[in-house]
Image (cartoon, rainbow, N blue to C red):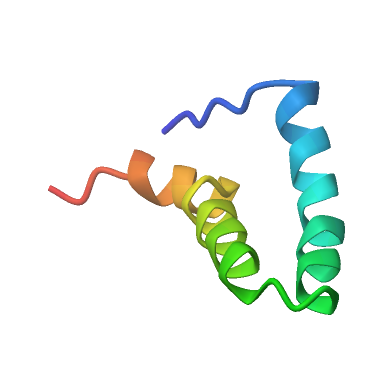
Length: 56
């Protein structure tokens, strides 16, 4: 199995998202925070690795 992760842009996004999540939450923007969190989970390395597994 091989999981490819794009470079610095992905890492930068992954580092910025938690800060943005906190800001949205503090600002009372729950819907935007939820959307950001769903996207973060969907595009996380764990999700990428799981989708790369062959369960057949």
